[in-house]
Amino acid sequence: MTARRKLFVNFDGLCEPANPAGIPCYGFVVKNEGAAVLCREYGLINSVKPFSPQANSNTAEYGSAIRAMEWLVQKGYANGKADYEILVRGDSQLIMRKLKSSDYSPRAARISSLYDKAIVLRSKFAPDNIRFEWVKRGENREADKLAKEAYYWALRKYPKLRAMVREHWETMLWLEQMIHNEN
Image: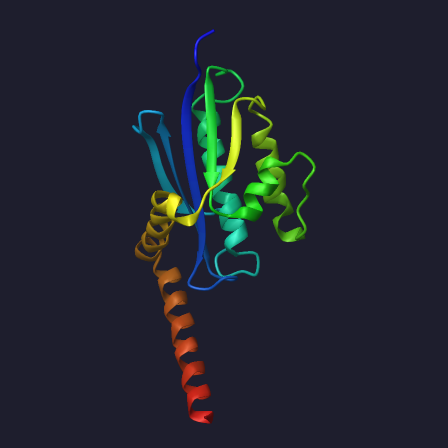
């Protein structure tokens, strides 16, 4: 029996400039056991509208895990590639616990569709070919950096989002001044 090759997938999501109700973004990186990068990707979570109540760090984390698993499926690493052991790592304990468990259900209705999608994608892999592991934030720096890059990319690409962020910070500054003036 030959040893299985390994893939390491690190993902991260963020919601800025406010959580909840910011811009949900994702980032992930896929490396082989020799640490060669097979994919680096970042972007917006398409299933959640920016600045909506559904936009939060949990939806961003789920969206990032989903996009990473979609990439794995698209590249043929699902059930057909039994010679690979895939380790999916993220720094959200909540999301990792839910992805690991077969009987864990979402509590918030607003993320149940993302949970369901993640579980369907997980089912495309043989159980002994994919594992999910929580890692400390410091061990997830590259994915974190990609999620942040997604946020800055979105601000450059979409002037409307940039204007909404500016409005958010103007409101926050106004509130801070009001509180300061009361004291």
